[in-house]
Image (cartoon, rainbow, N blue to C red; front, side, top):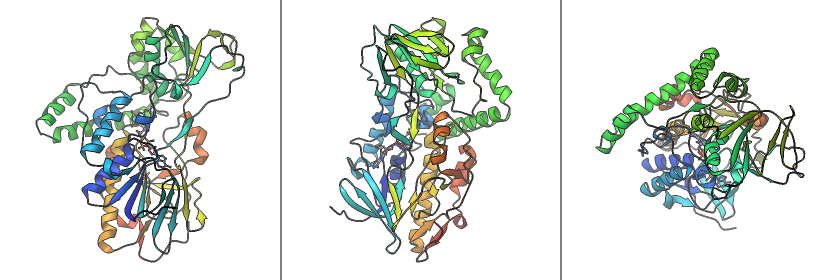
Length: 471
Ligand SMILES: Cc1cc2nc3c(=O)[nH]c(=O)nc-3n(C[C@H](O)[C@H](O)[C@H](O)COP(=O)(O)OP(=O)(O)OC[C@H]3O[C@@H](n4cnc5c(N)ncnc54)[C@H](O)[C@@H]3O)c2cc1C
């Protein structure tokens, strides 16, 4: 097996998270390389190409603080984000550090040499530290079992596999799902098909966005173009604070949240439609809130039919619901979500494979008992990037601290902590037993990110020769 020269840090993955880590490592002259299994940067924004894919967080806060994306629209397409990430990599010389087509299969920490051995399809790599930015979605989407699919004369496909260019002009489309992806895809599929039905098992809270940036963001962007960086930072902080406040208020006072959504949809739909299709059984912000663009219009114009009901089975000509209703269809698009996979390769410490199930996940940054290993996890109710950058900076502080004192290892002790995710969409509930338990954070980036600025060494276990037995 081909062996490559040792690196100080190996980053695994060149999506939003890996790119952020590389930027801050370079800024601090920490030598590193990125192993990326794909042949391009951008992670999900490059690999997913389905109709309607876009962000649902304002791009000004989803883009990096060191390279804000200036736009007159707050939500932009997946392709735009992919291009932005590619441009960021080339502008900051990150592309040169990426070894594309390199899939990590196994990483083994050698406790004697204090070194990670990383095994890939392109040979063996080694480094002092690993930053795992391999994403959290499994490659294959979640496809539930439905009876009678073999009888159906039309086509069934998952949204992830639906080609943007597919001609659906003469098709009666049924889109199954009510999460963020379904809400992004619905207006696009609606515009291109003969007829469209959004079939949801149960309703979600949906927020309709008008996609304009507002005067403060506009002003901050204008000033940024003239070389004033600070206003964009302030605007971003306030947008973050706003997201956190809404999150806390809606969770604390669910009736207030429910009233907000009632008023939000009042002008577009009648009360019967609202009660049947827009009143979830859970409270606001217990699950991520899908953000729609143009949904109100297609509902008002009766181009979109929304149906809430459970699928009993597929028939020759469509879908039969448990309550006896029948929906005729030529194409059924499943937007039934993702499976989660936080660890895309095996992690070993010497001859022991690390059991990642139920592992404690300190601040969404380090995993219990795994030395010199970081895995940044972004925010779940707001922009992923905001917390990713804060975590990247804290990792740098730790590395520089260790370099200065010639320390070999840093670790968080493995311990039992309760897995209590604040947001519980179905894909989290389905995978709960496999997920690490995040702790040591309020999950509110406007506050958390302040604490990330202060590196308290007592929270970590550093050593030169001693190695923790408890793993
Ligand atoms: C449709 C969609 C819309 C979203 N919208 C938003 C939004 O608006 N706002 C928001 O905050 N979040 C959003 N998210 C969440 C989103 O996943 C995160 O914001 C972010 O993109 C995650 O980036 P990442 O770099 O951690 O992971 P990914 O983008 O998944 O990138 C991981 C990278 O690691 C590589 N990799 C994986 N395994 C290996 C291996 N074994 N060896 C080498 N390389 C490997 C992959 O090829 C990939 O390039 C959205 C997610 C989806 C799916």
